[in-house]
Image (cartoon, one colour):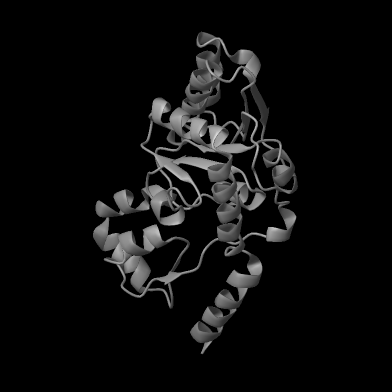
Length: 246
């Protein structure tokens, strides 16, 4: 249940405690869940989701183009229509702005709402929706853009955000759930309130107009992503499994 797990657990306290107490060890992929779930078990172990950092070509962003990327499933909890509204606001100042939205359709009507919103705002020609892509192609798609929009209303530690940082995109994200635990505002990302198109558009304007800020965010995001490489995470898994086995 990702970023929604703490809320889901509150109505099932006894069930969650029983489930977690029966395990030899319980891991969590984020500091957010570590803090939110420790009332159910105090010895939770932080082991983040890993990626193969060498698969993600890094390009430091300095002189940015208004090329926006969005990578997630089309589902209402990820609020994809917000990215469309942000693009429409930016189009007033940046006539070349484009938005590429990569991800599968989860069938809740979100993709249709995205297309309808784009039509209503007159920016259909600025938006590309290629659908889901193979994992191996994600770095190539990400590197088509310079700014990554994470528009979610509920979240934990999204791998897509880490992948974007690994490629050096400037990340602009909502500050919900585990995102303030993953991202450091003004250091490796810019964080804004959820469902606030004006705030997100303003943040994008900053990175487009301030190349120094953009480069700092880009390089810091890559450095943070390197901490999720398998070379860092795998030894911790091996040590834990050895400890549990004994």
